[in-house]
Image (tube, rainbow, N blue to C red):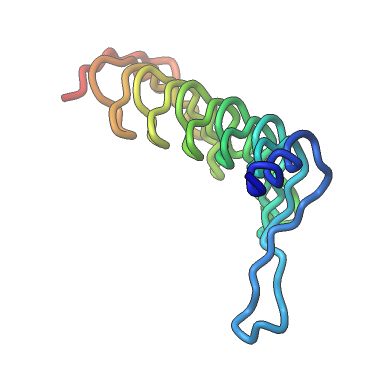
Length: 158
């Protein structure tokens, strides 16, 4: 009963909460990240922002301490935050519909399943080529269309 009362008091919006790890000497600690947002029974739940020690950031929906729902993940690259993924999440994995932004400038927009491109999607490569079609387990699979410059090839991947 006391545990339920304590968790109930940890529900609703709260300002920054720091996540820390105690060092081996048990006399010091380091900050692993900071969360600002909504809580439910002591867990991140609802809308919130988590800023990681690395400088990366997730801004979006949470459910039971997991990225779940719509959200955007940013990566810190040379003192700047760059959008890496924008879309749907399920239990901390890209799942549903979303867009991944690659470091080389390529993008993938489409369906995801358990952190992998899976279903229909479009990959725009940095050289200007565009593949639109089916994906399975992070690979082009099934029917799709690959456009190279002004050419257009209809392919059937096996």
